[in-house]
Image 1 (tube, helix red, strand yellow):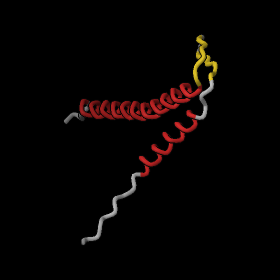
Image 2 (cartoon, rainbow, N blue to C red):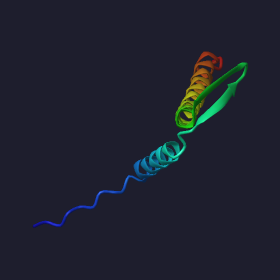
Image 3 (cartoon, one colour):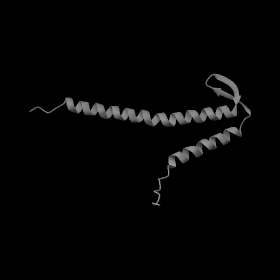
Image 4 (cartoon, rainbow, N blue to C red):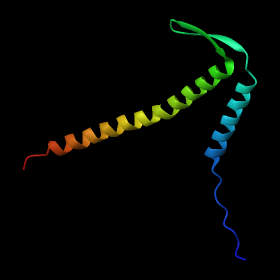
Length: 91
C-alpha cells in the first residue's frame, strides 16, 4: 500500500467549532429570565436568548466589517486606476 498523504489541519474550522461549542455551553447554563433594556425599550427574556442573539450579532459584525472595508478599499483602488488612465501625459 502506498503511504497516505497527510492533509493539513484546518485550524480555523476547529477554532470556530470550539467557539460555537463554548457559546452553546454558556448559553445553556444560563436559562433564567433577565430584564433587557435597549435604547428606549425594556423587556424580559431568557438569558439564553440574549446570549445567543449577542453572539450572532457579534459574529455578523465580525464577518461584515472586513468585507465592507475590503470593498471600500477595492473601490478606492479602482478609482485611482481610472483616474490614472484619464490623465495621460501630452506628447
